[in-house]
Amino acid sequence: MSEAPAGWDDAAARGPGGHVMQSSAWAAIREGQGWTAEFLRPAGAHALVLWRPLPGGGRFGYCPRGPVAATGQLPDVFGALAAHAKATPGALVLKVDPERTADEAGPALTAAGFRRGPDIQPVVATLEESLLDRTDDELLASLDKDTRWSVRQPQKRGGAVYQGTTDDDLGAFYDLYALTGRRAGFITRTAAYYRTVWRTLLEADLATLWLADHEGRPVAGAMTWHCGDREVYQYGATNDAGRKVYAAYGLLWRCIVEARARGARTFDFGGIPADPADADDPMHGPYLFKKGFGGTVTHWVGAHDTVPRPLAYRAFLLLEPAYTRALQLVRRRGRGGGE
Image 1: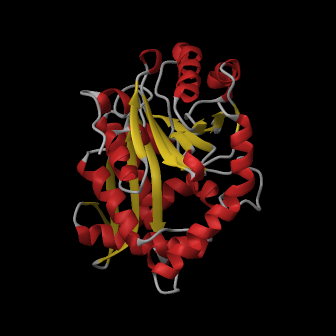
Image 2: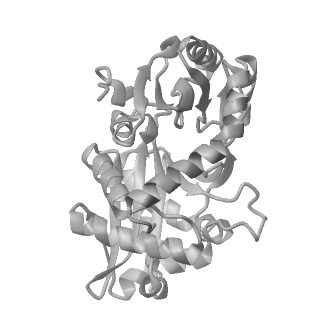
């Protein structure tokens, strides 16, 4: 298991522009899933790079939601990462997807030879709300009228919000999240996977789990990630009982209030459609829910690749679907046929 340099998380996860996916905790999670972590400081910045072996001795590199650097550093940082990929034996591609706008990162990526590549993270747009120098009352007053009414309903109807810490709490949240996934049509992984990820991040103080209770049962849940001076609404879930008492509204409002109390300068509402006006996008419903709380639409620059060995990479892209299918068949047989 790779060991992060001293002070890594203070800069890469908790410092300005930091992200949970650049933390030593995230490196440990991914190394447990077959990746190899490399902690780099290109041009004085921070970049957790994860490497995955490919058939034929190749390697796929990914810097998730990184690198973490000041805007003025980006040209040198991306240039250093491109050079590192070229010098890494077997590296076919190194992908970056910083949570930066095209204006902030686009020119530096182009100058370093990176090009737009397939996204790994599904979130390419979000809503961001400033918490700086604003009281709870001022934030509440800024909500849409209907949303302001909704956030008051759970407490009026006997609900309560509490911080989840136990394995039972994680199990309750997974049940809510899996139910929400089936209802909304998005893919969820196994309970064991999420339990490992969530427990690791909670113990590293990089995330907080909140649950909403009604009549003695959890009816909604949310998990926020602490990314530098941003609080990110990473997961949200509710069941039918929770929807009837507006539990998700009260829960999200509690997340915002607690983020401000924690010292966060910005609240990030998580994924929304790339085109918020697209009513056919599966994220349109969650977007309508989130936009009632305010925030400004922000588009990230998206994933960009540096490809040190273009011919080998093109061959990999041709063979990759068959390789992935073979892995799926092997895993299925290992489970005795069922998914």
